Image (cartoon, rainbow, N blue to C red; front, side, top):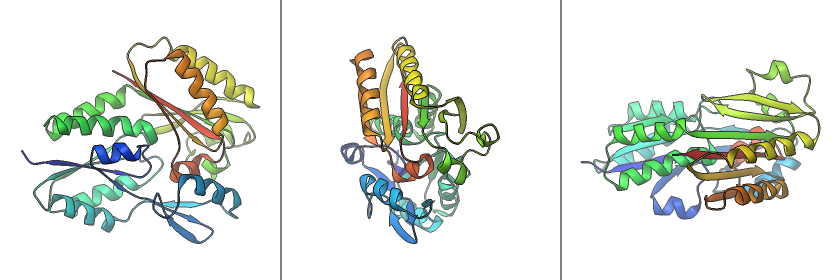
Length: 280
């Protein structure tokens, strides 16, 4: 059986240790801030990005990797006869997965591309599950089936303090009609079925705190929660408070708290957070 190599994009939430442990190739996206182009994770850090976005004259622009970039990576990884499994963020917020698909068709080696229907740590749940199955010697078909199981048992909820970035970036096209006149409110979104869906809205931080308390109370009653991820774009104090509440409710469940990627932060704006978990 040929070796399977994992590829993903930089919107994923992985620790450097996980990238190294599972030998994952992470293809960076690019971000343009006031005519200056940065390479995600290479020429700009997550902390630096938040400062630069706050000072920017216009909304930063993100770009998926070029087809040629994907093709170069795929050709290199498959040159020894290996297969590639490329897992990318949901199509609703980026054309990255489509660039990967086009490159896969041009590659001489075997490349399987998966739209994971999520991003951030929710995306990592599937990628790490795939990595463990690769280590166990499973086939591509078995791995993709397992990823689908993880996907179907994953939840990603997002709190957004300001909808300007999401609306300007066109990522709320399906729900912007109900929200377009309420851009000063706090909104709770869910990523479900590969789309962003508005679940709650209200004025002031009471909306956020009420959602978090209700969410944690319900989460504490769910059996077999395997992992929780909390990511944030600015607003570390709020994210730490959410993490503390979840840890108190689920003391034996691993929890990863990290700043989100610049690509995601561009869409959500400052002060956003996401809570992600999966059950097995």
